[in-house]
Length: 270
Image (cartoon, rainbow, N blue to C red; front, side):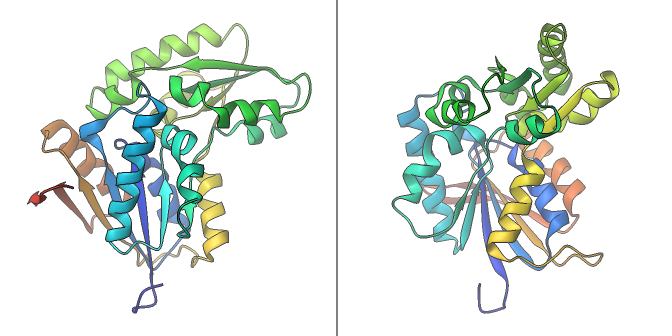
């Protein structure tokens, strides 16, 4: 906690999907300084090797620590799967991560097949395999890789993104009506899913992660006069990314800053 009696929390994602987690965390807390770093120049992470993701996550984490963050959320399922445990062994700063909300889905729907929509790397990583292997005998998980979907969302091609996801949903409907969104980007399409498929039960990890962080760090409750602050840092000047980040940020708070930075040579412009 800093000299003003406020926590400074860093949030990192390979793109803009982590803003969906931040939106939930924002509602649940107050009096927090949030710094969001979107590593868009290297996005998407889902098709990279584990070694590459670890290296990129390490740089993002160190960058946020340089910004005096006292805890860091990997608001990216892929980065969490590949790098969170590795970095936890090297640092004492609390590192939080995301995982597909398979367990909450099973609690409410025992014995039912569940489709998990996620990146290819998330689905093939040990963390996901361990999650699945720890489930009750007879539990059936249907992994649905969605390569390229996060990139479409980041690029503000949401109609194309919806058409892509809609085809994936139609593919699984004959087997299940329980789906887990295992990437924070996909959560931006959740309202559209609910509208077109009202009988589907949809789960994501945003609320569970937010409440876990709040409990562990003992963060103040959200309130009507929210006193959180938000600084968004993007390492690309591409207009589609910047405009979308600004639009999403305004749904969280009108009082945010959005800066374009280069983590090697410093700030480009504001």
